[in-house]
Length: 96
Image 1 (cartoon, rainbow, N blue to C red):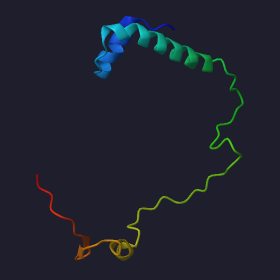
Image 2 (cartoon, one colour):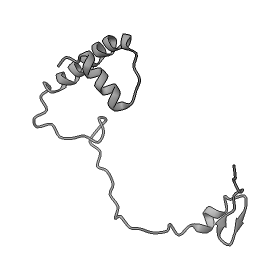
Image 3 (cartoon, one colour):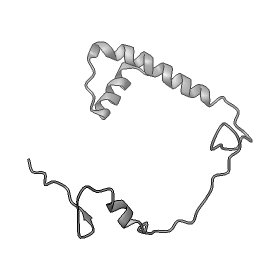
Image 4 (tube, rainbow, N blue to C red):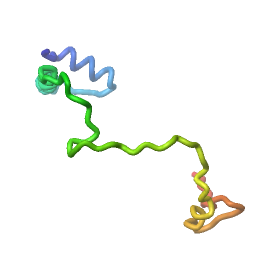
């Protein structure tokens, strides 16, 4: 697929990017090369190839039950604060 100047202009307008008229030809050529490379990926035979989580080796990801908790570590977290009040962080007031 070839990308022309009008397509680059339309993409720029949709992205709200101002591109000088002189740069449209260069960008059209670069986008055409990118689209051509992506089209080459369609030619790669992937039939029977399983999805991978890592290219290093077959890794089984550990799973845990999805439970909503408060973490039960409020006191440990508040120990990191420089100032607290009634179980909450105290931060400086910010007014501009």
